[in-house]
Amino acid sequence: MKLRKIFTILLTTFALEALFSNTSVIVNAANNNSDESVIKNAPKLSKWGYILNVKFSARPILVGANNYRKMINNPFFKSANTISPKKIKNIKFKVVKIMVFKKGINGTPEYLITSKNHKYNAWTPNAGLQYYGIHSKSIQRIIKPLKRIKERDLRVLNKKTTLKSDISGRKRINRNKHDFNLAVKAAKKLKGKQRQFALSFLQQMKQEDGIRNVMQEKQNNILLWCIN
Image (cartoon, rainbow, N blue to C red; front, top):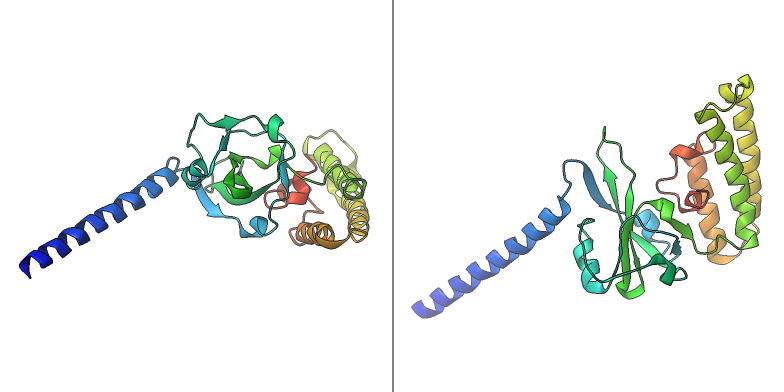
């Protein structure tokens, strides 16, 4: 009985040490830059599944599920097993997590993206990502009016216009509303999941006041990533 008790205690001790050891690795990996950033799940983006292509990536695209597991809570993880975005331009990815910077710290959010079976994986800003169907005529009918909204807002932001109507915003916002309605009209002509995708993100844009200032509402809106 004594031997059995000793054996049980030893097993329990080893199990607890292993548990805390694994936990500390995850925490330490996640806190490589803990004073500045936070890693969170991104359910509003993840739910759309594999709908993104990679134009370019700020960080290397790593190959393999083993690398994916190490990247989940560590955007700074490095591996020699990488691949160029040019070789996988037609591969579809989905967003898994987002790394955002804490209040008062300037920095572009980065997204952990992965392909099916976690074959290809990367942390990258949204500027390198685009909706897989962006080049279709039906999607371009949505993108073009949204680009006009962006260009109009940029002129004011960069002070490249001296027109009082533009600076005050009334005329600009009315034009933005007109272009937004054109985008909605085009989205309603789509079918199936594409229609649902476009209308959902247009509704999100409206709710977040993106019609007034589209440049501030791009973080969690995949449709607006397409107007870069």
